[in-house]
Amino acid sequence: MKISIIAAVAENGVIGNNNSLIWRLPADLQYFKQKTTGHHILMGRNTFESLGGRPLPNRTTVIITRNENYTAPEGCVVAHSLERALAHCVNDEEIFICGGAQIYALSFACATDMYLTRIAHSFEGDTVFPHFDPSQWTLVETEQHAADEKNPYDFSFNHFVRK
Ligand SMILES: NC(=O)c1ccc[n+]([C@@H]2O[C@H](COP(=O)([O-])OP(=O)(O)OC[C@H]3O[C@@H](n4cnc5c(N)ncnc54)[C@H](OP(=O)(O)O)[C@@H]3O)[C@@H](O)[C@H]2O)c1
Image 1 (cartoon, rainbow, N blue to C red):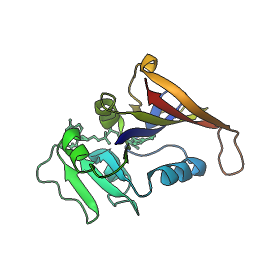
Image 2 (image 1 turned 90 degrees about the vertical axis):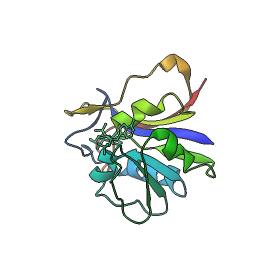
Image 3 (image 1 turned 180 degrees about the horizontal axis):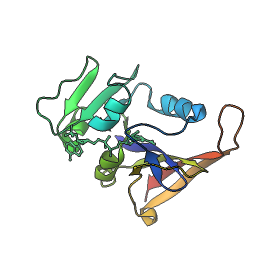
């Protein structure tokens, strides 16, 4: 099973503010949808709530929380550790770790792949993508995009595989 981190990261490492996304980049939302549709998506309770507390269509949402009493809507699974979240996904060939910072940090140890959208702009924010050791990862694919009328910043899609 591939365990793939997927994140959009600003030039200064910021990924969010006040438990929400900061930028509007429809091309990245489309990329996220295309990668994750049909798969399990794992996320921390904060990220789940930042998305409106609803499952994303055509994916199985696994919410990670320490709260034993947490109840989630239909279409979601609740897990109380990353290990237990992964155990829900054994029949999937690729699962996606969708953040936020706490869950990315937990996942570096077991992730096989990383899809990082790099946004060529800095933002004010309270949450940053955690530090990882770049020497452990090989960039296997990169795709540069210039800003356009719908996407106000230059950005790139980058696929890394663990060495
Ligand atoms: N740019 C991007 O690609 C991207 C993607 C995702 C999220 N974000 C942003 O990231 C921010 C949220 O990130 P965050 O770091 O604050 O929160 P988070 O990682 O989404 O969720 C944190 C929560 O996960 C649970 N948790 C953490 N470690 C755990 C463990 N070891 N075992 C069990 N449960 C555990 C806890 O839930 P309980 O408190 O319920 O126990 C904790 O409060 C938001 O601003 C969001 O918009 C950005």
